[in-house]
Image (tube, rainbow over all chains, first blue to last red; front, side, top):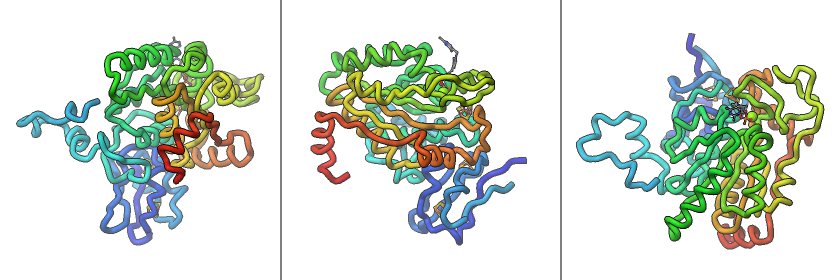
Length: 63
Length: 285
Ligand SMILES: Cc1ncc(C[n+]2csc(CCOP(=O)(O)OP(=O)(O)O)c2C)c(N)n1
Ligand code: SF4
Ligand code: SF4
Ligand code: SF4
Ligand SMILES: [Mg+2]
């Protein structure tokens, strides 16, 4: 089973904190126009570090 | 790396890998990107084989986003977990024999000064705690005594992680590891203080939980090494695998250690470095 971080877009406020806490490169993409992040799931290792820092509980690990 | 070198020759666009094309189109060469821009540009590091939640992998990502001039940076690495990631990094890098990294960097920097006297060439050593504080300590110290213009960055996971968890000089006293079952019986080496008395113009200890502090330390260290002399940055980058942490506990571990005072962050700025930072940063940062 592949696990990956998922973002609940409606909760994301685009604070970008998750972007500098992920050990994997180019997983998070910041969408400037929407002020939100997207996740490139194929690059995520499911460690959960980003989940621990998101101030809006917008991130979770799922499959 | 000259910016022109990464450009794709006409009619080869179709056959180049997607990751390479992204590097050319949205990479950080010649751009003024930093940690705040992560997620908006193609990073220098690609998918790597380091473990999930690795503090060292996160620190490398942040270091690479903090380089003042990536296109003019040459990394000298050493054996250890970080070496496994460097083959996925789009910078010139040399993997030296374990422990020799500062000797190799010294020679390289001296040669580059002669060959390209008017160009920026930042030589940055990035190596583990075992490579820096134990096996390579002789070469590290000699490069400091001799006031070489290089930056030394230690990725301190407080263990020989790549070989299954032996204690290093940087392991905390009493810490138990796979191959240190009785616990370490002498205190953690204070290499930051050693660096200061050995001649470093700038010394910082930091961690990836404070990414902007890390960024500032890396930038300052590289700029001071360019103009003044040796600099040292020590990054606390825990290894979840050898310390039996859950992969999502690395940042909490870093924050706890800072809170309890067993791994403080801080800076030593020599008078010359202070002068330099004031002129470069205009007193703003
Ligand atoms: C000359 C030499 N001695 C020993 C080794 C075995 N060795 C490979 S990695 C390593 C440990 C590296 O520890 P550290 O520098 O802390 O890096 P880490 O893996 O923890 O990131 C050792 C002892 C080697 N490759 N070469
Ligand atoms: S930390 Fe949370 S709220 Fe902030 S950008 Fe990331 S997902 Fe959005
Ligand atoms: S779970 Fe880990 S690898 Fe995946 S996005 Fe979050 S921090 Fe990155
Ligand atoms: S063993 Fe530790 S330091 Fe090495 S890649 Fe895994 S988590 Fe990172
Ligand atoms: Mg180590």
